[in-house]
Length: 488
Image (cartoon, rainbow, N blue to C red; front, side, top):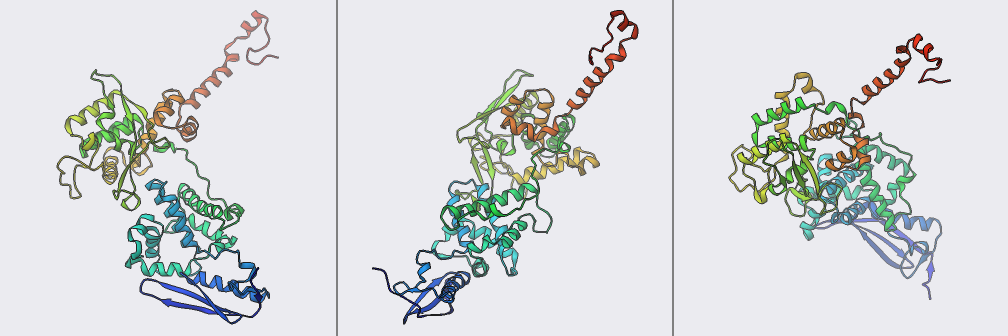
């Protein structure tokens, strides 16, 4: 038998209770003489619940005497704050995501959340830090446990909880468009890179999709918004590609500035390795022939990435992972031309490997003081970028230095792949060496395949010149009045 229903209802305002650890918000109402209450963590949720009760009263909807709720709301789910939902989404993704992916999700949700607030954000920098380093970091919240929010983030998180939109409010077209527009801007107000916008949009879309999965939303609201970010292209700018002479000059500059990194950059240029793959190399991965002028092979087993202690499960800033877009135990062989073989042998003679035979390790502290072996830390990426910047300054002309030419160490990999393609190595082989699919390879490096246009023009010019080279007498002697290229 169902409960009795009534229209004898009175709803009071929201009461705020400030406790030692957190502040709560309680909605009180009376149904046929019985006082009821619901407590919420945020003012937004409390206001949303109270608004539902008032709307039911205004629409003369009967209330269930047994549970005190409007009859139509008995099966309805309570409102959920956007920030709380985003935190739950992060928790579901955490165990299966790489540290860099975790960080990327957090950055996307931070940008979206900051753009979603209706009120002006006080101390935006601290609110961003609280969201990224606490709310959207599962490890940080698990480490604190019952202790709750750290003191330095407490005020920021209180403001966030009190001002977070309800999840259903995030589906409003005007708000969602404002959020999406917020993803396209950097902190300084300038447009963000298309790849950054795409990554952040993906994080937001996945958070909404999770809401659909748990039946918190009927559909993904982003599917209903006709919003398109700037086109993202992953085609390589040929201006970043160095030629062999420039590459050798840069490597020579590195040898003078920081000798232990010459082989590091040489592996990127000559073997087309990603920097993270170079950091993972050990002596066991090298097949270096003793015969002069012979080619060797680099057996790649994984990569070493740096994301920061906040995003790894080990608490170390670095983590060894599988090769990019490959299964955990997948391997790849990369070629080692004679020049790289020579450079690696010189490196092994001068610099002892670290723990586990790792070739490239941190050998000096922050003050430049040498670290005694055994070298336990993979090569610091900060040092790699600083040395590369100095090498560019030393090896390039002023015009080249100001240009995009080899701006990043990764551009040496682009130079390697471009060199292979322009040398006529089959695309299937290049894709295997570089760890790409053929489709991605040709799409990404299409603009760096040079020389083909000139050769094609030469063939067309040769074809067009055939009638001119044939004398009228020769044509008449054959009795053939038609061109071999253009028959009637």
